[in-house]
Amino acid sequence: MKQEEVELDRLRIWDFYLTFPNEARNITYPTALSELKGIFKKKAPNPYEDLIDPKRIIERMKSFQLSALKCLASYGLIDSKLLAKKIIRRTDKEIPKELAEKFKELSVEKANIIKLIIGFRELPLYGKFGLKDRTGLIEFKYDQR
Image (cartoon, rainbow, N blue to C red; front, side):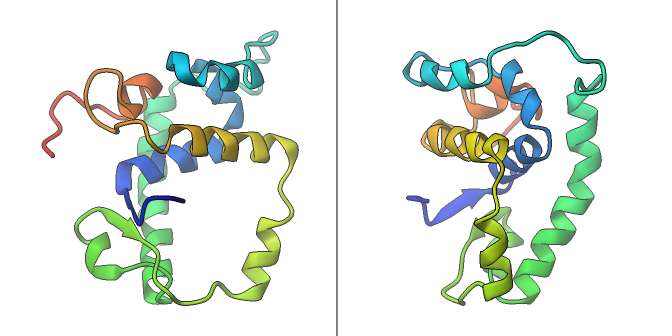
């Protein structure tokens, strides 16, 4: 990542799409990233892949996501003081080799989601046409920066 710090909600949205890659077809893509839209174009509906209420799902995922981040902070992989401020920053501590090996085993679908995350990293999180608005997963109207 180019950024040293990532907002908690941005990371939660990225995690949602890593967990449910088929939902990426429902994002409103900016014109500059229209090539990504082609990767996730709508296909014939499959009732086993579609989520009925993605907003509810991401909200239910929140406690698990926060627990995982607290675990990473306890191992010294992310900054615990910034985590308390809802900002994620990687520390200089080396990632364990076993974990690093797992990153190499990405499916095509997960690799495409990584392309999406890279494409959306510069997109603002807040406001009209920001990441929250374009995904529709997390409310943005009352955000204070």
